[in-house]
Image 1 (cartoon, one colour):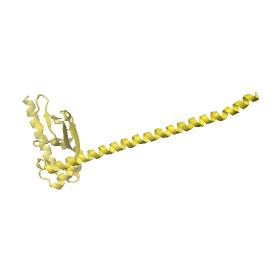
Image 2 (cartoon, one colour):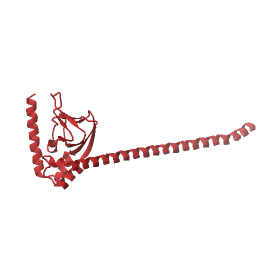
Image 3 (tube, one colour):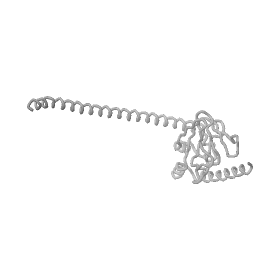
Image 4 (cartoon, one colour):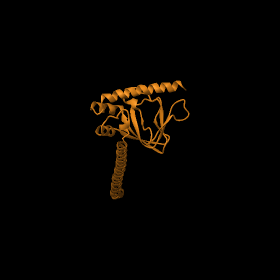
Length: 212
């Protein structure tokens, strides 16, 4: 018995050593896993920052293009606005990017955005027509959705599909439009004009539908 006890005492420190080694290994593995997770989180944050920065740069570039083109100043809605007012409106617009074949808007969907083409081209389609009924292009018509700015229950009367490799649209939502109105950037004449345009669009759409 004495010999067995002595052997047990001899091997006990070895077992403790193995336990300490295993515990240290677990701590090391946990630290490495933590470092790896931190690196992945940091990498993801940098990627998001680059993406956000690129998106911001693209938006600003699109806004500059729109300001220099004076497209808004040539629309019925904003033709009487000065440069400072136009700048405030454009600064409130968000950039949307579409690939060829993507729907920019769909017929019969609710609409709440006035949009201006700043890059590429798009085709306008209506149910019952095989071919496009109109196009959006940089040297032609470039705006859609004027009626959405004043109609809370506006329904899109046609579909718009990107026809070039990349299409960029600057969008002014109804909420932003109302906010600008509350700030007196948008005047009451524009609101009334948008309502009249909405009525004209509906009348034209009704006439087109009856002729199918």
